[in-house]
Length: 77
Image (cartoon, rainbow, N blue to C red):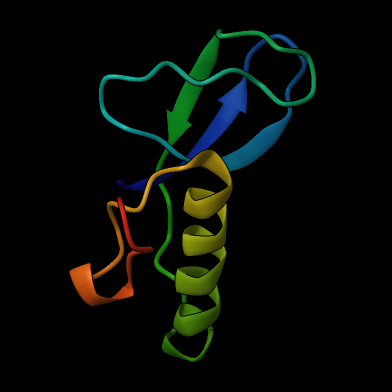
């Protein structure tokens, strides 16, 4: 699941979110779905492990483990 950067056209907030292609995200500030996907920059190599851990933590909170290796997934999923 890719990490996208969005800008809300309603409140001008900018945020990053892991989103499936078929999902429509909502702004965490105002709840609007009027969003523009922004061009994201790649994380510098030194920060990449932190971004991976952040993405995995968000995936775990949301209950999906698609970006985990099979050996890293919790049993029963």
